[in-house]
Each structure stands twice: as structure tokens, then as C-alpha cells.
Amino acid sequence: MRLGVVDVGSNTVRLVVADGDGAAPLPVHTAKRRLRLAEQVDAGGRLGDAAVEQVVDAVAAAVAEARRWGCGEPFAFATAIVRDAPNRDEVLETVRSATGTELHVMSGQKEAELTFLAVRRWMGWQAGPMVLLDIGGGSLEVAVGRSRMPDFAASLPLGAGRLTREYLDGDGVTDPDAVRELRRRVRHDLRDVATRVRWEAPRTAAATSRTFQQLARLCGAAPGREGPFVERRLVRADLRHAMAELAALPPADRARLPGISPPRAGQSLAGAVVAHTAMKLMGIDAVTVSPWALREGVLLRQLEEPSASPVGDAGSGGERPAAAAPLRLTAARGG
Image (cartoon, rainbow, N blue to C red):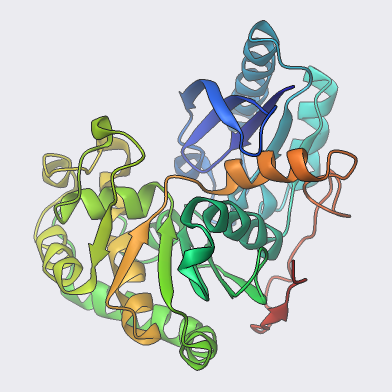
């Protein structure tokens, strides 16, 4: 059985085609199209016509490519950049009408659950009670649990791209006052989640996402060319020094540092602030960086529950969070 997923994110649209005949999805083909949607939203988060057209073209191309690789209809989903857009429904309908493909969105909590599932499978049961951190472009997901699925999961509007636009946008060296304001925001929003994580006292701390991968590389982890089976860790003390280095450089110069790609150089400082602040508040000295994340979680759900939608009851409409809703820690279903 050959499965596929199309992931519409803040910076890229990614396709993964995998063989699913065993217990784990084994990738046979991947592709990436860089759209940088986060740079094309207005102040209210709305995606303009040009951006929507790019999404349509990228989804259509990814679906066609998946079929060439022997995959049926791949499961297409979008993360916070589309989920939180005021014109989300318009975007989803445009993609469906133009391509015939349903572009699904899921709640931040569901993203955290599926990412936790993937990382649990990668880390194995020896990890024991585990906390997971996942910094995306629009949101930060946190999940903690002892089983296959987390005991609770939370999603907060602390994505690296979002916070860069709100606090750090600019081409020059970042104002230290802006960094302090950003850190205060992150501490405030994470306070309740961090308290719960510390109470759970997880044995293992794991992280995933391109943000964590690039920060780990910046702090000395092995480069990607050495493959997914090399252990990569990010130590909080090293990250503190790296954060100061990023803050002292304009984005163009950050892109010359190990691991920091030019498209993500602008948001690398915000990602570092979120990662360091979260680790400090939660009492985490180091995280192990997992190469498996949300896409693999969707594939695993398709393997394990082929008759169910990976997004649960959300369907293509998903769950729209209230704009000013207070933070709530939501108990997730156990495994």
C-alpha cells in the first residue's frame, strides 16, 4: 500500500509518498515547493489572491506527482497559516474547486496529538513519559504523555513566523528591547503549560520541526546529510549563546551560520527565543530532535486506522479557534 501526504505550511508545501506495507511508513519520494505564505499575509492574517493561487498550483502539482509515484489520492492538509486565516473557508473552497482535492485543516490540539504519535513511534517506549515541543511558523504545540497518544496537548500562537512579524520584523540588527518584549510574551503565554509539564516530570524531552532542526545544527548537531538515524540534541545552555549570536546579526548574516537557511534566517531569532524560553520554564536542559513530525503522524494514523480521517471529526473545515479565547489545557485521548 502506498500512501501520500501534502502539507501546506507557512513556508513550503511538502509532499511525502511512503510505502505502508509494514508497521512504519517508509518514504520513497519527497518533494518541496517553497511558497513563503507567511510573507504574503496582511496584518490580519488574510491570504491574498496571489497567495491562494500559489497554494492551488502547488497542491495540484503535488497531487499529480504523488499519482506518478503510484499513490492514490494523497491526504492534503494545511497548518496554522491557513487554519487561522480570516478567509480560511474561501481558501479551502478555492483549492477544492480548482483541483478536486480537499485541503483539510485540523485544530492545533490535533496537530500536537499526531505529532506526538509520530515522535513516540520514533523514540520508542524506552523514552517513557515524554514531553514534545514543536515550533511551526504560526503556532507552538506542546504535548506530554506516557502512552501512544498524549495525556494532554496544547497549541499556542507562538510560531516563529508569527512572532517575527509581530515583534522582530526588519532587515537590520534586532532592537534588544524588542527581544525582551518577545520573551515576556512567550513567558506569559506559556506559564500554565509549563506548570503542567513540570508537574508531569517527563523522563524524555523531544522536539521536532525545521526550527528545532536548524537550531540544533547551529549549536553543533550533525548536519542533515548524515541521515535521520544520527542522534541530534539541543542543549539549553548552548541555545542561550546561539540566541545572543542571532540577535547580534541582521537576517542576511544569520543565513551564513551553520544550519540557518536563508528563507528561515529572518525568523530564526524568534524561534530561538521560543525554544529557549519554553525549555527554561519547563525545566528542560536538553531536547532530542526527532526527524518524524506531523506528516509522519498523519501517515501513521492512515496505517493504523485506515477507515478514519487523520483529522478526526474536523473534516475539511477543521476547528477554528476563538480569536481571543483564554488558554485552556485540553485533555487528549489516551492510547
